[in-house]
Amino acid sequence: MIIFRCNASPEVGLGHLVRCRALACALKRQGGSCVMVGPPKSYATEEDAEFIEDWIEAGDWVSAEQDAARFAAIVRDRSARFAVLDDYRVDADYQKLLSAKGLHWLQFDGTAQKPLWADLVVNANPAARAADYRDVIHNPAAQLLLGPAYAVLRAEFPPVAALRPVGRPIEQVLVWLGGGGL
Image (cartoon, rainbow, N blue to C red; front, side, top):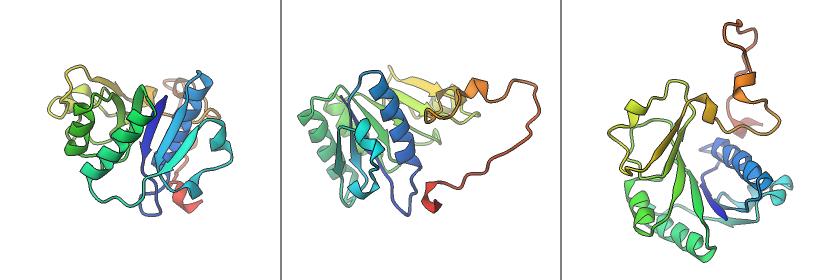
């Protein structure tokens, strides 16, 4: 079982949730089971029930320590093997608590500026470089998954490599302002 901790709201948008849904769907296709922790249940769709076993609302964020302790308890109670963190409020204290509990997780990051204790760090930015993470990675066994090859896309999108052959000019550009305005 894999437990997701995701943030989504009118203020933050739905990008984190969409990314977690796409990953949970892919994991389900490979035989995994997933639980979503965070957003209100009103954000769940009918399709989510096909690949998300349970949806646990996190309620209001009081502190990183409180949320981390609650999340760690959920992971323990579900006997989860792994977690996915897609919430930029997850700070050093949050991660230290998870690490002290022996948890393993993937963490989405887009800045390479905050301390990270994750086992896997995903930054799909084309300009992301391992050198950018030299001073922020605190887990010596961490694996960096950097660049567009690690972008989490829904199944209806073709693989990144198939989008445009090298050297072919760009003919169209889609500008997306997030899921909150849909």
